[in-house]
Image 1 (cartoon, helix red, strand yellow):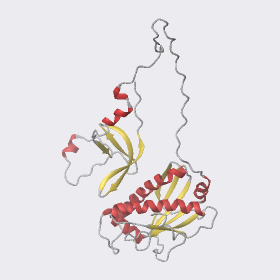
Image 2 (image 1 turned 180 degrees about the vertical axis):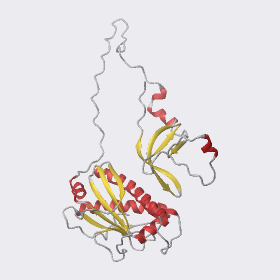
Image 3 (image 1 turned 45 degrees about the vertical axis):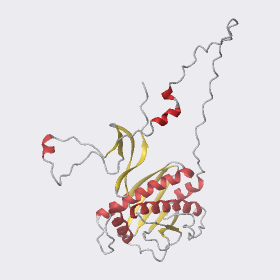
Image 4 (image 1 turned 60 degrees about the horizontal axis):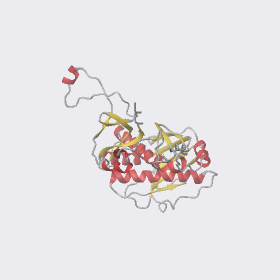
Length: 306
């Protein structure tokens, strides 16, 4: 969704409406990006202040999530996906044929939740330039509050993928959006350089100047920054680790088609990215063009030398 796509957005009249709708436009752009990757089609969405006539009616069967926002912003948001839209999104995510008469199964709900988590990951990246690092915690359920801002994200024009989503932001989040200053990432100020040790005065007989007693040796050619380019095309194999489990030999011998091996990690926990058996990053599993991928949430700090 581009700025042009958001032109139908109704003007916000509340004190924090402009910031709230700017925040949700970034969520709309993220939704369009994920839907476009899954469907292989161009997707555009609009952020609307009022309930559109085309949006499905509210139902007790609608899929609802509460999102706790932490870090650079503090507050809660609620997302409601009408059942018909949730079925469409679930079928799309699972690669199933679109069938509006199909039963909405637990697999579809899990697919919708994973789709929204991917949208949230893109949104968190988009929010960072203005509001800094933002963490999102997801749970099922409806909002218990009615204050704050609300609106809809829906398909733009004749978009081939038609997903509707109602959103609410509580008053704490809308106030945080207005209060948080722009936070361009700036480097920490560097410590002042220590004065260089003075060289010995020239020898009156030879004119030579001796090096300072504590002068560091010249760097090795391999340590020169430019030579790092020689290594950048080295191909390394990385692996994803979803979890582990110790098994008895008899359990391993009993394995067969249809056996289920339970791992030691909850589905909501991040998975490990391994290089040569060492964890280098952690993140959440995503699906990109039908293949597994990893959205990095945390990069492991290198072990200190010595």
